[in-house]
Image (cartoon, rainbow, N blue to C red):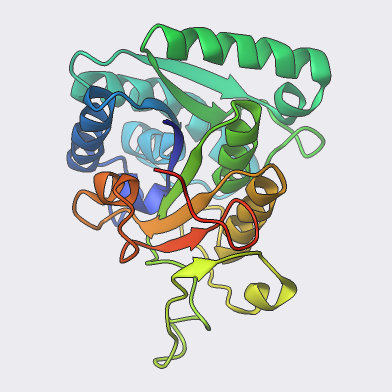
Length: 257
C-alpha cells in the first residue's frame, strides 16, 4: 500500500518548540516496520522551524525570522531523520505551491518522487518556507500532505497531530465533546468542531478538514490520529477504529486493507 504520513510539529518538538530526537526515533522505528511490511511511504515532516530554534537559540517573532529559522532547521531536520532511520535512506524534498499546481512542475515532482519510491528511499517532504511568499505558499503541512497524496495517487493519507481525531465540539473547551469515529463525507457542519493549533504549529482542525476534502475529491481515504498513541501507524494500517477519525474515500466506503 502507498501511504503518505504527515507528522505534525507537536509530535516532533518539545514544549519549547525544539526538535526532539527521541520523538523522531520513535516515529523512525514505526516507519521502518512499515517498510519491512512492504508498504511504500512518503513523509511530510514538520519540525524545520523547531530544529532552527534549537540550533540558533531564539524563537521567531516575525514571518521573516520564521523563514530564516526554517532555512537553518531543514539541514538539522533531515540529518535527524537520517540518524534514526537506520538502513532506510531519506531524501529531502522541498516544494512550493507551483510544484504541485503548475502541470509541468507537477510532472517533474511526480517523476522524482516516483523514482525515489521505486528505489525504496523515503522522501521527507516539506514546503520551501525559506523562499516561499504569499503567492506561492501552500501554507500548512496538512494541505501539503493532501496534495502530495493526490499527486502520488496514494492509497491512504495519515495525518498525525496532537488530537485524537475529529470531535463533535472542541474538546479543549467542551467536556462533553465526543470523538467522531468515521466521516463518510466532510460537510460544513464538521467545520464547527474546530480547535486551534499549538504555539509552534500552523494548522488546526480546519486545515485537517480541508485536507480530507482534497483527498475525498480524489477518492483517497484519510485518517486523523494522535501521534502519541503507541504504534499508531501499525494500528491504523491494521484498521483499528480506536485510532483517530477515518475519512472515507467515497460516501459510505471503507478503506481497503
